[in-house]
Amino acid sequence: MHYFAHESSYIDDDVQIGKGTKVWHFCHIQSGARIGDYCSLGQNVNVGRNVKIGSYVKVQNNVSIYEGVELEDYVFCGPSMVFTNVLRPRAKYPLANRGLYVKTLVREGASIGANATIVCGNIIGRHALIGSGAVVTKDVPDHAVMVGVPARQIGWACECGTILNEQLKCTNCGRQYIATNESIVLEGE
Image 1 (tube, rainbow, N blue to C red):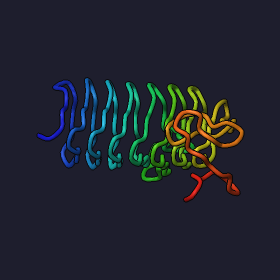
Image 2 (cartoon, rainbow, N blue to C red):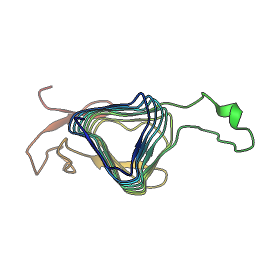
Image 3 (cartoon, rainbow, N blue to C red):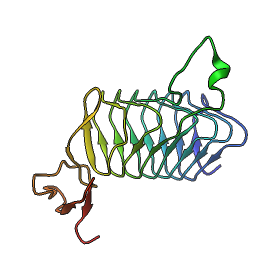
């Protein structure tokens, strides 16, 4: 076995887990899930059927990644953050929603803070930073910093995670960004 799974975790048939990935206590990886290389799934993580997770993804404790959610490489999911996958769930009419999972995409390098909620059907842009407790109800641009309920943009984040100054320059790594119509891009790209 080229990955580590704690003995208390359940891994169903027809699952792919990449080399160097660690699956910690009390996790459940459901059939059809695809997990890349060098990921870390903390305690009590549920990976739903047919979920695709890229490489170098870190999922903290108590996160459920439901069918319809896709995480690209280098995504960070903070403790107890929530993904949804049905817009109008009903316990009384469960068959009404069967097979109608709404896709959610978290792009490369995005970070989602503890206890944040991502409403299904949205795209979280590359290197975006979702603050703890935020509720994302619409698409998030690349590099956007989002906070609040509902989440609103308060600034821009560097690829390294530092909040950019007004000149869109990172005070940590020195990257310089330029504004586009809807986002920012690294100068020279």
